[in-house]
Length: 72
Ligand code: SF4
Image (cartoon, rainbow, N blue to C red):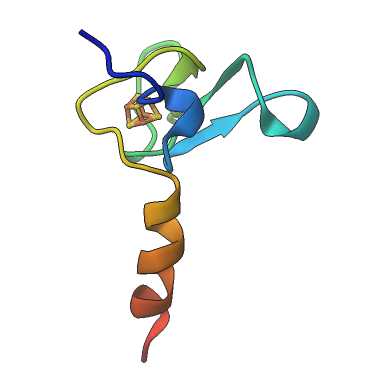
């Protein structure tokens, strides 16, 4: 069962389309673009904001991890 709030909309890897990037569709940036016959240059998976997967991570996690990644 999907836990409330654990959807693409609240995932740190999701970038929504449309006004203020709120979706309802958007791109999952968890992994690099996927190359397919239809998209030979690669394309990020497109999901709806209410979707979810096992890779979900809270948006706030990005704010706490970015400074560490930026260290020289
Ligand atoms: S598909 Fe998974 S990793 Fe990608 S945005 Fe949705 S919950 Fe996050």
